[in-house]
Length: 210
Image (cartoon, rainbow, N blue to C red; front, side):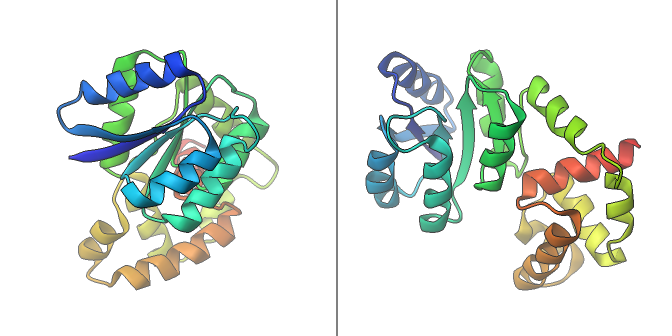
C-alpha cells in the first residue's frame, strides 16, 4: 500500500486528486493540504510515501515546500503536479528534490501510472516536460562526454538507477552496501552536474541517445 499526501490550494482540484488516488486499490490518501505551511506541519506526522505537490501555492511556493519537506522526510518522494512547463521551474523543482514532474492537464490514468512508476523507483514526467529537460542537456559539453568521465562502477550504478532500481536494489544487485551506493552516487551527481536521481537518469538516457 502506497500512502499519498496532496498539497494543492485549489479545493476542487485537491478533491479530484484525492478521488483519483483513492480509486487505486494500492494507494491511500492520508492527508490533503491547502498550503505549504500546512504540509510542513502535518506531513511529518503521516510520513507519506509520496506527495503530489502543486507549485503555485499561497505564500510559500511548492518548490520551497518540496525542498523543506525533503529535509524533514528524506525518504518521501515528491511528484510535482502543476500547470507550469517552463524550464526554469522544472529544474528548480528537480533540484529541490522532486522525483518527477507532471502537468495538471494529464489524464487521471497518467497520474495513477506515475504514482506506480514512483513506487517502482522511476522518475515520471509528462512528455512535454521530458523533451524540455532532454533538450537542455544538449550543450557543448555533452551528456555523453560527462558520462564517459565516470568510473566503470559509477556508470554501472547510474545505469541501474536509470532503469528504476532503488539504492537498496542496486546494492543487492552489485553485492555492496547501501552506503557504498550512496557514496558513488554523490560522485556521479558531482561529475554530471546534477542534484537529483531524476536529473542523473535523464542525463544518462540523453547520453545513450547521442
